[in-house]
Amino acid sequence: MRISKEKKKKGAVSSAYVFVALTLISFSLLLFSTRSFVIDIRDTGLSVFSGVRGAIYSVSSMISHTFLSVKELSSLRKDYAELLQKITRYEQLERTAADIRQENNRLRELLAFSQTMRFTHIPAEISGRDPDNLFSAFVINKGSSSGITVNMPVIAYQNGTQALVGKIIQAGSLESLVMPLYDEKSYISARLAQTRYEGIVQGGLNPEKPLVMRLVPKRAQDEIHTGDVVVSSGVGGVFPPGLNIGRISNIIYREYEPSLELEVKSAVDFSRLEYVFAVDKETIGTGETPFDEVESAQ
Image (cartoon, rainbow, N blue to C red):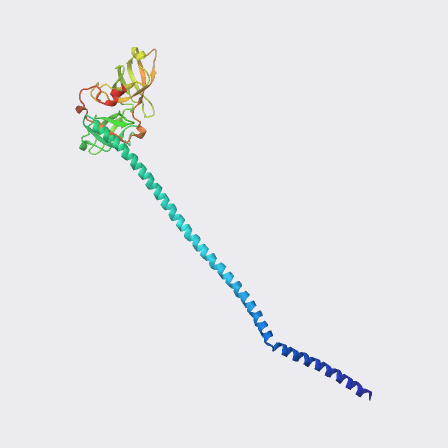
């Protein structure tokens, strides 16, 4: 009897658990089956997928922009290099134009000087140096086919004045060799343009050293001054009279010497010498000062 009551009690409890469980399941099914829950799930899924899609778009956009930036940078570098090349070409053209203007100005001056000459002359350009004597003789681009002959005087026009350069020592068909007056083997009969004292001008070995005028009488010491002009005297027949040689830069007096020694600065700046004129001395005439520049210097 007692056993039967306990069984009934346990059965009632079990039934109550089952009822509660079924009730919870029913409410759960009812809840999940409502429209609002489905919408919430969809919204939640949409939000999650939207976030993922946004992140993917951001990453892909960043990568795309990175590649575009690299491409643009490469293009900019290429444009920059091209601009640098253009600037370099423009600078070269500018320098070339400036050189051409200077060359034209020099040629105009030489042309004007050439038109004032009253004797036959042959213009020439220095084209090289004597390979056997690099520090002395130089080559001009005119030869015997242009009328050049040995012993022709060679002059130049610089800084508004004419000046003696040297003489022709060898004449080829198209080129000639000039011995400049600073060569140690060069001797020129000269005189002082102001006082008329005469002497011999010898080269100083290289263009950096002064020329030396020897055999000037000692009695001329008080009449000679630095800056006096020295010209060719015409004695000997190689150089016609009146060619501008230079100016006295120093007067050397020695008790044991019978004559004065004068240092002479050449009127030619050989470091800038480009064009010269070979002179036909037979057409100059007999005047002692055929050059206006020498006359003005006196």
